[in-house]
Image 1 (cartoon, rainbow, N blue to C red):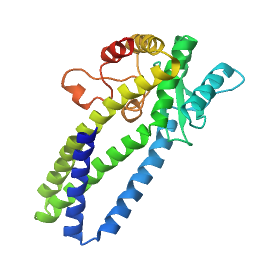
Image 2 (image 1 turned 180 degrees about the vertical axis):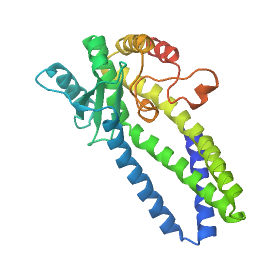
Image 3 (image 1 turned 60 degrees about the vertical axis):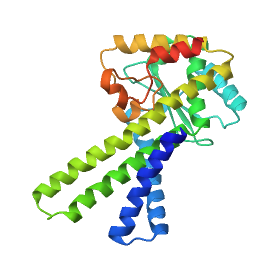
Image 4 (image 1 turned 120 degrees about the vertical axis):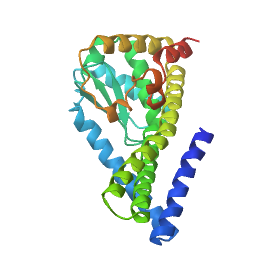
Length: 265
């Protein structure tokens, strides 16, 4: 975490120096602009994530046990009870957005039908751990750094070129490649935070078996499902999601088999 975070900060520092040198912005203005950019990205991202899956309030009269378990877990973790919502995602999954004191946990209808109460509690504890650990904020911060670096790289190409059509397309390519490079480190942080959330959840519920069993069912259910209705950005927030081969470099989650082994060991 320290190494990866330092690399991300180095990317941001280089971008800040370029902005100050090329545009003549003072450091306070650069910092203020960065905070505003990430803040807007955070607010819009949270709203877009909930809207993209059509999330609705989880009825307390029908799911009183779920609300009770979340309230108990939140008390044990020292955070406010998050807002609980339900959505139809096409696959069994769950995700959290927000921060301590203003968190929201979304579970899919498919997940509620698939899991036993103890398994569901393990998933909910995992999502509450993300809220308590401010993992969503950390991901947004990393994505914000990637966007800032990409924008600065594009403008650097445009301002140092001949401002013709070739420079325009080159700037797009440079921006995309730069953002992809920075996101490698963001996804590395994300994969590590999944292990941490799994471990914290196991501590809260008294063992790793319920969450391990839930991950097995979620993985199997996702493979059987015809199509996921969750887009790529929201999938990065979900409890389950992985890539294979080279795609694992850009995966927001570690392999589910490794997560299950760690939970059971």
